[in-house]
Image (tube, rainbow, N blue to C red; front, side):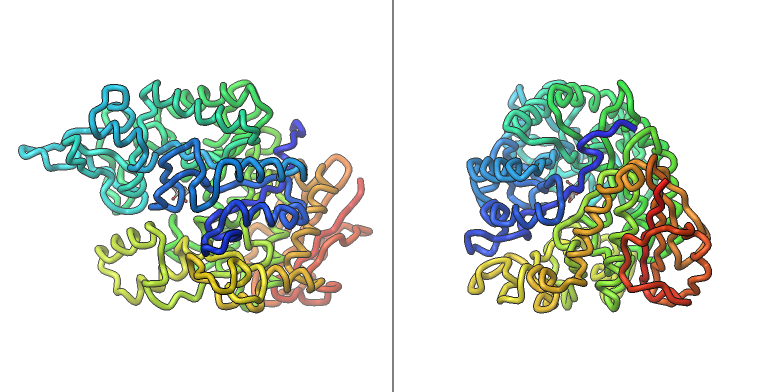
Length: 554
Ligand code: NOJ
């Protein structure tokens, strides 16, 4: 596999609203980000991916963009962004922007003009007349991802528009060449400013099947077989790739319902590659059925199977994007680890995914082991998808108590509480007398960056070590061949990464229960050097979440 800068990166994801407030208004901003660039550098991160910073009414916290060319005033100005960009580059940190082009905000000028029937913009979105005698039936039976109807009637235009997400997020019509030109213009604008690539939001949903046929009956996301990796996806991505070919940049596409086999159609090395890597979702489904709301309990065997598939099928062919948290996922310690063993399980999870082949992504707060919020009532939630999912599940007849329990475990709100910087009032996220825009996890007095810096055994220091080791032994960790052992074991995750010069052996007890170490000893090569561990030594039993990594020089 060709060695490139973006393959070797550890990317730190910032969700701007909750990262750091620099002006005391309780909302994270660019000034706050600027003040933390050294911290990000200190982790060993090579890049920052910014969740949307653009002008947005925030119906979906920035994933509803009203102006692609400017910064949301709550976050600062374009000049401040340029300062952050320069500050990042000075430190050798690349900057990846979120590119949200499946849809815009309904407050975007394009949508306003389209609704008004302006000839230049009238086909920018997916408009259809209503059906039935009175014209009041939806154009088809598709449903939105944020469960609800996929269509909303617009009085001014007298037609329905398609939105695969919230009502405020009308889908763009990529079949219209003028829309594709707009996308290319946006890409060039940011690349010319100096950004180093894009994370492309639900990019595999941009092409809808001609005629918009009805979908098979499903309580949510009905119609998805007609737009998930739709008929013209590759064609449109090829066009967008023409833009990035002129720059030294990278593209990572968000790809719901992706399998490794299909991923290879887009990320295989070679002339027709259209994305450098993709964010799959299968590995985030080891504790649920399809969506995190349908909780099944953590199943390590399921997780290992997914990793094994992606690692082996993409080996020497395409590239993985490895993450265990982001702004859409509840905190991983609360899901795959254990809050009781917060630090130990945090270290086990960090180890588990840091030595997999692929580019590594870390979400803000993950590095200090932030956990889910102890929600008490529905008033504690703010995310549009939490409420739309609640509404859908109510219709299915579940009790409020049961739905609340599901939401607590699954809501995206869990990832969106402000970063805990210190034990000061408001966790050092904003000034002590300000009102933070969202709830701060009460555990901040204990779980915060300042405390983690002082504790040599903290998860934070462990992350720094893991990130450094991943680079030091990159032939094995980043580019090596994956070999899984004990596939059927319910507690142990043991694998080798075999590189040209080094071999790494990763041994993890990914459970709260002890397990006989005799089960793993046979996989540790004689004379191998231990380079990482979260407990000292290895006794007869592996303790909860006990983790070791061994190095063998070839
Ligand atoms: C995926 C983003 O990660 C998520 O936060 C957003 O709500 C949807 N796409 C819609 O843009």
